[in-house]
Amino acid sequence: MSGMHEVLLMDAVVSPEVVPHNVSYAILASIILITVAVIIRGSMRLVPTGIQNFVETIVETFLKMAEDNIGHHWGKTLFPLIGTLFMFILVCNLMGLIPGFASPTSNINTNAAMAIPVFLATHYYGIRVHGIKYINHFLGPIRSVFALPLMMLMFIIEFIGHLVRPVTLSVRLFGNMVAKHIILLVLAMLVPWIIPTLILALGTLVSFIQAFVFVLLTTLYLAGAVEEGH
Image (tube, rainbow, N blue to C red; front, side, top):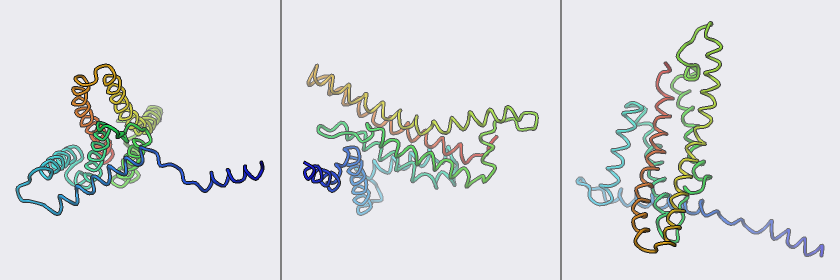
């Protein structure tokens, strides 16, 4: 018996772990985006058509949003992060509408893996732009010796608010994606054809909206970090 236990223990140690489905589908989404980027780069046209036109529309939209909210210089600097997040989240969301596929964003671990870098980037660029004065963003509008208790209270409130940001980003996207899949499954069992077709159209709209909301909040967080603290 001891020998059998040793064999089982060795098998457990040697055998590789199964890759979680959210990781495998996230890798697939990355491969899709890289492949599309390479194809578009190899067939660039002066007058865009097809997929190039779609991608350029998204690029121009989010570049303008970044520059309008963050400023011309930092908007261009942070646009690659913002644009990449939108495209990746959108592809992940839409994958959940394909029969037999799962949406990586319906797993909170995937969303946290995006929200935490956004949180770190926010404070990295805030410190990079303002240095030690970045702490003014946490002290409120009134700064004097007499307002020290109020400043300390504002610091605690702002500190907790910033810590909650990656949680809200992750949970919001996770909750909406899970709810969408549950509704699709329930309606597919009740009315196999007509209603699910309408819900699929609604699911496509939700996929775009949730990707946009995540990126919009990311843009606002970054804009708040690099602007002057008032």
